Length: 427
Ligand SMILES: [Zn+2]
Image: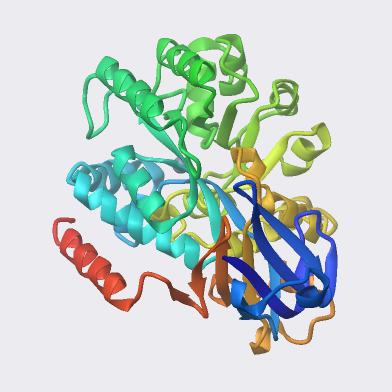
């Protein structure tokens, strides 16, 4: 069914054009979702009310779906389990021992919780990396979000298998099985250069190339890993990844915090995509600040990620947009960087994941912190947060309306109950 959102106060489209007092029509054409923006669309498009789902756009602003290009959504289960700790202790004492207790079923429910959280906050596409990928993919499809679900590879194994060769085979099988799906895409994720060998990376790259998928990996998140690599092999992580033939346009690197200008040039040269995760970097005190300005000047495609909820501690891209803008201004003593348009473009860029952004998010402007509207784009970046999201339409389907999930409260309460049970195993 076509959807007509009538009498919207504002629309910001993916090219960042702003419209006032317009309607939006969302329709399917040859299986593709098309969006029409204009005045009086009911008459202009010759529409019949009985063929339409009509949504009242009064006191609302429409914008494209937000994208979260680096996350680990089942880690919603570990939200708040450990904060304010040194990274290595946080991982060794809290995250890894508790992750080891998670079953397939736990990961499924954690994915559901994370998926619903993203939907509630207007995120319609995301790039995931966590074990039990099959369960994450299943939950993503059930909710109806667009997701790149990467199968994670670590040399010492994951809870799915401790045998690296077996993991690589499982990854290939997972990709083969799901490569033709429409709203979810499989991918492969060698964890990081300090947890995966050269052979692991090159095998993952071969698989990504063969099946035309993304290769999703962490790069230069902490100074420690960079110094270790420099000491051991006299190369920095990006130099190393270039050297072994991994840097390419199908690579999406998360963090890229501790990198030099020369490494930025290498990312640009090979068309590597970057997911900037400022909230997580600040919370884990990774130290450096990703060179956003240098990356954009060199033409690197940069988007925004929340990272996992254990190091953020939510999946709110609207909040992350403001953090991005503020971090770079503070870091460079320059209020002109991390500007509104730059940040909006990063947050709307689902094409980085291979998804056309034909999704619509309605923000509820009926809130004191969103009045007056002198500049709607400014209100989105600097004043709004995820709770202001009112309605979310993904691929022409309404999944959240008036801040309520289409799944209903009973379903949601059941998820909360399951999550409560899983929590009992942690310490
Ligand atoms: Zn991560």
